Image 1 (cartoon, rainbow over the protein chains, first blue to last red):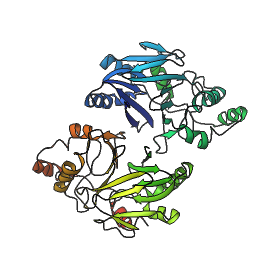
Image 2 (cartoon, rainbow over the protein chains, first blue to last red; image 1 turned 30 degrees about the vertical axis):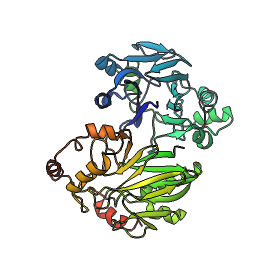
Image 3 (cartoon, one colour; image 1 turned 90 degrees about the horizontal axis):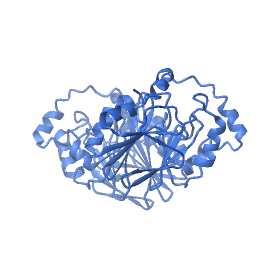
Image 4 (cartoon, rainbow over the protein chains, first blue to last red; image 1 turned 90 degrees about the vertical axis):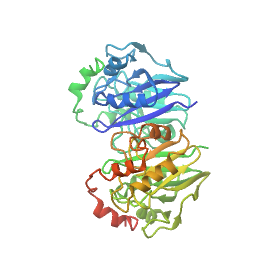
Length: 228
Length: 228
């Protein structure tokens, strides 16, 4: 049976948070600290018990709700093997499969935006939660938190864009009013995915000249402690 | 085969626009005039030819892109039997079923927010585009454009909330970061749907004391001419 999916948008940071539900259990991906009462109310209304929280990476633009959700509900919090964040209740690593009700979620290590970035792949029905590794017609930046344009190129071409064409892409952010895409669309129409030569991609990413996120100096240290 | 669905959000008016695709043909529901180049680019990328545009009603908070899309693509524009808008290329009425590729879209007349409000129901796989008749945990207001709280009560209880529980609700607006819901959720948790007595509902709706939408004086006259 197809798992339940709810996509929520935080207007302040343009962050998407995802609630998945299967057989009474819920997973929240990339919760925003200010919105946890909204998530808890929705979980109650949907009759779901929060089993675990995952962040796609240590965020620089908002504070994670993982720690507060753990405090409120006693849920598990996953931290990746590569993450510097403390305080998770279990560690996951590349290719590991996590169980949620009758659903399986595969963890894909996709460094580039940061050195601890993961995508989460629900093979059935084919949903990919891409965090800041892949946006709709864009990608995350690679110029802080040990980001690496070379790693992002490899993650995109060796891990993400090889997934089935019809896989639905659910990004970690969107700034233009889009909410989902597909691997086929991104492979064929994402300007950054279309850069074929690795050196060209690195040159492009290293010359974006972006300002740091407003929240960075507060968010990164907080998120290394699950936002608490 | 499940039709393609893309949900787009206009940050200025908090309007959701929907693109449906089936067998190479596309339908756009509630396009926002300022965003039509985004829609046209997405249609091209998805290899879809725009067959028709539908508005759930004559909007008061944004200008429809229907007329411009018709000009640019030669697509059809539907107007409801009850609408005062001119210039549509065909008229639809309650219970009428429209064809898009291999998909059928049923038109449900749901007056209340305005006297020309419709919902569009894709029976397979069970998607309901509710416009301003039903929001996630709310409804549209009923205090202008011949709106009627009594009619909205009847539309909700006799037309909408009787649909299958698992039907996905795609609203015309959201102001809190939600993107979809279900009939079961709204039946059980929407504060306005939970008002059982019609008189109580009318009293509630008639005492909201809301300011008029900022765009109203411009949008309504423009939308009576498909936004042109």
